[in-house]
Image 1 (tube, rainbow, N blue to C red):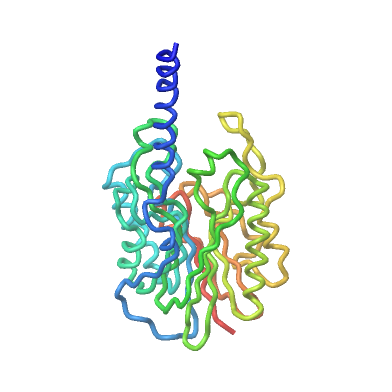
Image 2 (tube, rainbow, N blue to C red):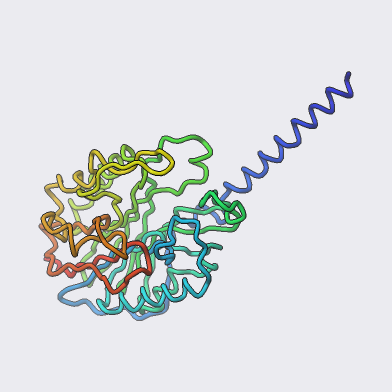
Length: 339
């Protein structure tokens, strides 16, 4: 009897221990979490202050084009071609500041290319600030094939600049109310705050990538971002940019798995309600040529730039359509002047 019980204990205990060890390894960070907010120097000269500046927001979808969030596994040449396409498109507007979302720093899925460095070098932008939001050994997506789940992923957001970045702050936003396993492997949604020195003035740039699937969480995140931005605006000119994952012309829909996605509350309205910030592209012009997603047939405006109208004058905005399908999003540009 004792032998039987011992055998049963081993039969149950060993697999349980193996699962626990795997979970610990798979969900553990591959780098020191203290480095998840860091500065980078890409050895380009600092530009001189000027009358007006150009800022761009771009969710590059780790340069996977329309394969982003699909089971497709493009080859290395595909990523290199998209990288060059993105650089050429961005060169056409010569950004002084570039806010990137979904950018890989070292990831198996994008062939271990440091995409932040590649873009900084290609554009001649010397100052960089990085905020990591995914640091795992294992990523259970796409769900099939399981072999694709294994491999380091170090990814996040970045702000590049031709001018000094004095501070870089990484703020983790409200997490989704999902099960423990989901939370362990899901990315952190961030507000990245950088202080950029433009001559004798300090500009606060807040880059965000908000929740895509759970609307209640996205609404709360947007409210927080608005409050944070308005707080900074008491002392500085502020630009808020990024992927808000909200579009006024997108309702709810049911996925093939029977899950309801889309919007009922339209979280972007939280930013529209601000008396401090103005949208670089007026709300009445958000559809048509100003849509940013999907890049092959833009229908929704998910990417935005907001600015403090009391301290910043917007001169021009443009969706950079020449980026084409380097990402599933198109980049958004604003030329501005500090008042």
